[in-house]
Image: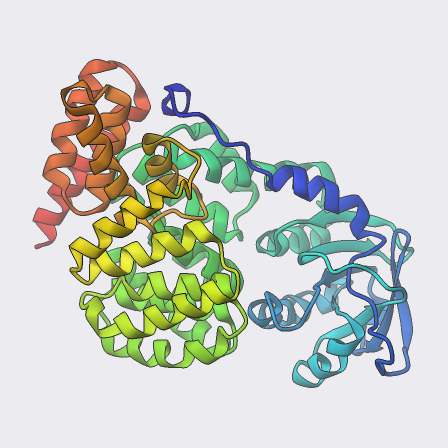
Length: 481
């Protein structure tokens, strides 16, 4: 498959990081009190292994819960802004089935959060600890930890299994690792259909699992109509599941930009979710992308006007905001706002490669070709990426984090590669260039290049799948016109 053909695989640190943090999390799941900080008198304590969490805001029924989901956050001003409403909905849905949800925060954040979300129990740790990324502990009343989740997107399926008495910790961990694996390989065309079917069946309420089915239809099978049907099924299945819907929308919208029907349906489904989470940064960014891709520029403008203040102090999300604005049909309208966001992101220490890539997207989408070319040249001269031209372009287009964000820079890298290799362009490089052409809307050229690559390596399903996708997309666009 494509991953074995001269593209050096990049090891994901996600699994290693999760393993390292997991054990420590029981002892340092949330930040402790700041010196002199005041906190309410605890009503009681919750236990998870060796960790003890003092409850500072209780709600009726939590004390009687057989199992408590402890959602641990280093601050109330980060991911929790998107997660709070979803956690409250899960708590309400399962409160009469022996399950409860409690949010664990540093003491300085706990009281203010409890005032904004009185329906959720709120706890703090009983010791000082270093802040950790958001994590979820599922603990019985006696403190035994049933499971640790690295992604809250899987919480709905875990709680349903717990409530029905069917929860299996090993199966839950297998499902989570399966989802992450599929998302790592699906855009290489390497995800096996059997693995996808088994994993997605075990996670019907996961936005990532539902998105993986759509991505598989696009990237592995080359079937845009199948992808459209899978997207519609996903939207129906995730109705009422706010956070999974956000994850689904983000991945699907970034996975393909050629189907306006899918974008329009996602924008419609996201509207009530965005309205219910006006402070949710990732929620609003996903909704903004959906609106822009659906051609609803006026509605997008209203959302975009609210985001600069919300994204203050979040440099990584400021980069996302800037590149999302460049998805507009008329990107010049948003050029100044995107440029300001990137200035703030750079000053705040955002990833250097992402800054370059987002600036290139701004320049290219706004028609400033000379400046875009100069920026790409500087990017290469300063070795911002340690990858080869081929690998850098491929990973920009296919890795989950950058998928669908920075295709203009990927195309620039491919154009440089074509100049360097000339007639000696091999089938691996041609495959990469074809994808860059496709992602940039030059579908006829993508078909031409991919046809040559397939001839050079017959019977490779990943190469053939991409060619099928390009041809099917061309037909779909012609029909939809």
